[in-house]
Image (cartoon, rainbow, N blue to C red; front, side, top):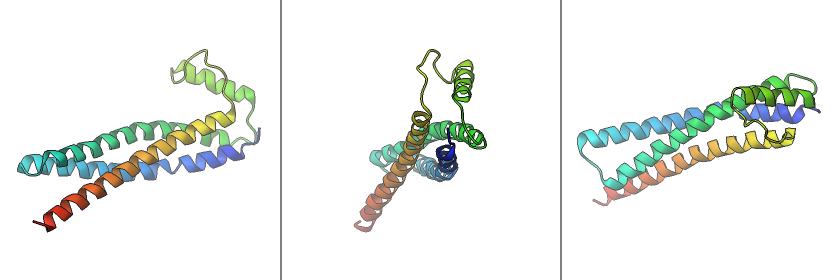
Length: 150
């Protein structure tokens, strides 16, 4: 099998780190804002819930980032080979099963299915970070406008 799609997938998954760094900054901002709010006994319950949601989204993004990073390493390694054989995919399945990262006895997946699964995880990671951005902007916008109106 030609590995062009594998190279493209590995290159795209390499960007997971940038998404994760952004999410870490947003999560840290949420934690800091929540701590300031709790220490200063200011803010509302709605603000605390919004900040907690930002933190939870960041936590979920971190879990996905770990998995996407793992997939990136696997695809980067396979992308170095000129072709990928069915035997190599079977060996990968065996190794993943050995470390309990894949259920034993699962049907063999095609290369395309595997690539699609990795990209789906990366998209979920990106959506979680995007949700953090939207939630922060909405929260800042709402409380900023509320502060301006008195």
